[in-house]
Image (cartoon, rainbow, N blue to C red):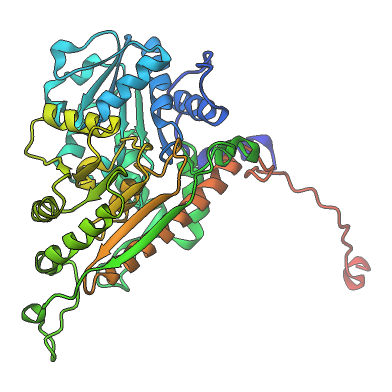
Length: 466
């Protein structure tokens, strides 16, 4: 094989273009080796993703990436965060000496790193920022969503873009296409046509990875992202995991008293089978019993900080009636009030906090707390995983106890979440192998090697005699 033909074949493989820094500047000394490698890769690609598990320092990586990107552009970077994470990000920036501020509109934008909540995107001028980083970027999972479309349009053609999240695609690999589209690496439609097939064997006709295309798909993903559950996933050195191996997490199931659900059943014996359609009907009938169980759990150790996760307002109302010491954060509250409550919980002034994972389950660091109770639970694996990782993360020194309060028939939710967790673990394994190939760490990276035959063939007698 000639070098020219090998180069031609290599040019046909899907790979993210490098639009970032050609020459890597010196990075901050406080970064761990795996963080430094992640930031270097993201700066070189320019539009990249960091899928680092909770507690691995996504915030530190984002801050350093923003600093180097703004120095290479117009001196102004933006980090967009979920509710209440902005203050935490600013504290991290101050700790490491970055110039950073929380902004609420364009008039407050200044040089350095600007931090803003997603709900204030319409008050900003995206063209004024040389770099943008989406914290907890799983907000892009619904590409047809209003927020996703607004983000994609607002930062189109921005040279430096970063997506950071611990759960990039817990349920569906197609969600990864939304990151690629935002980063302007490849459109979702092109990704589907290259590596996926529409599975018409199922009623839902879901898209799935083509069997022969899996390796190529993960190699493409590794060209523009880094994923890790432990530092060694990136560095290849198990010694780098010291200090990052978490204490155990213990999940306990508590069953509430049986409720009369016969009026909800439509079967021969009036039984009810829990499903996504009747989930809230069952929840309303069983919340009183579930709240009583939660109260007994809190009463067993009232001085212990605890998060009480709920899914609905009526669940929050029931929990407050049974646990008067608990303070709720509700969506209708002013942002300032929410931030005050969160700060009080972090300092220990509030011991028992009621909240929804969809609102508080992303980005926040509550390693001071090692107890949580799920009074309400949905079918979403991502919200459950993220909620647990608010406490079960780097910095946690104790065993994290997760109490699940279950009503009649809710075992099906646990089975669904467990299946999604297994799918997520498979994705992490595939990405780990792809990154190793991309970095030539194990010597097995894909390379086109010329064929050098060693067997000397010979012609048959009847042919050689002629």
